[in-house]
Length: 329
Ligand code: ATP
Ligand code: MG
Image: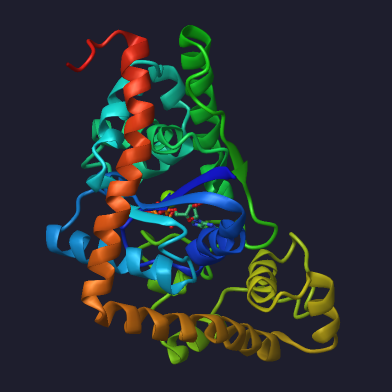
């Protein structure tokens, strides 16, 4: 079996974008791979976090992975901060990454603009930690949303650079981008991606939003004055709603256009809300059920951290030998 790695930050509340762009695909392909799904809490501290909130969100996120349908026995679901090899490999890879490469990263530019008071070195070297996450497990495949493509490319570049000096140490990972939902846009500003760190709560549907809130946000979504249900870049707000509808129902844009032929946004928007709620409400119920079972979740956290560390340390030891660190006696 080939290996798959992916992760999500425990920052903010998860959005429908995270679910449709990442988590949903994880569940679909998890059977075919040996999977590592991390709650990447070390990435989260590149922006300031309230410690109690971070701890709580990390646990909620880990539980959500399972609630979404990932079997925690077949898949390794763990906290990044519980496996110290991530930090150790990241340091080594930092020494194989150029400032110029990191300067080109658009996520850094976006986040630096947003957090001008805290442009820390961790925010700048974020892609290197992400490279370490992936390379530690010798991942063949990394399912991500389109926004992470650039980070995946730099991961490959770093791996290739290391391999060309030291021999075949790292597997070169490929990105896996789902067919639908790879980039869900903000409901209020369809030119921006839906993001959990967006200040405007109406732009995002949160996975924990109740049905009334979901319906309200869909009805208020920014569209246009054309008034016809068409899947086109000229109607970006509507196109995004069609993407959401299709991702939630399994229908295609063509089928959707036929279904709503001659109908207006007043009919389509509530249908989108219904489709989203039909996915999210059961997910929320499962999440609540699992959260109540503290001992079960604790067991998963412990066992999976050990399993992840076992694989991660195998790669780390190999890297340490290659670069000339003294052997352990
Ligand atoms: P942040 O603003 O804190 O970076 P985020 O919403 O971008 O939050 P991440 O934890 O950075 O969330 O990303 C988790 C996963 O969700 C990644 O695979 C990312 O590509 C995917 N993702 C994030 N936003 C979207 C979106 N709008 N549409 C599809 N996929 C997305
Ligand atoms: Mg992000």
